[in-house]
Image (cartoon, rainbow, N blue to C red; front, top):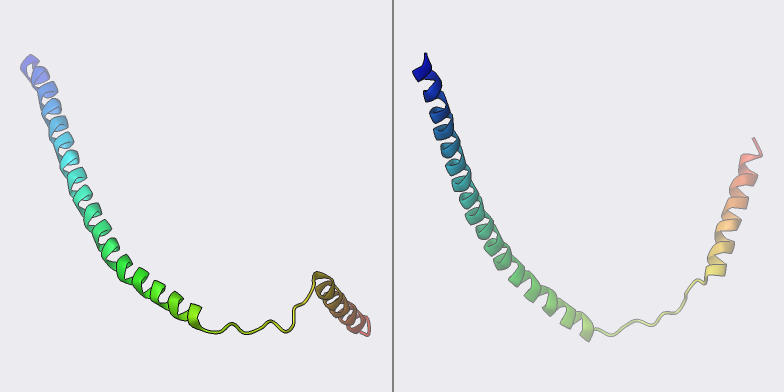
Length: 94
């Protein structure tokens, strides 16, 4: 019985070592996967940046249309106030 009790801590220690080794191996594998994903992201991002810069250059060459009308904050306030008055008057008819 005493021999079995002394053997159990050794088995637990061995199992713990194996678990630590497996965890370290898994961590290395995840690190490799992460590096692969980062590289793929860089490869996808570069063409997107090139296309975006090209489109921005082309859009910059287009003539800008003049702004003919712009609502002021006061005009917006009056517009929404009139809408509210109209809705309230319509609701009170019933």
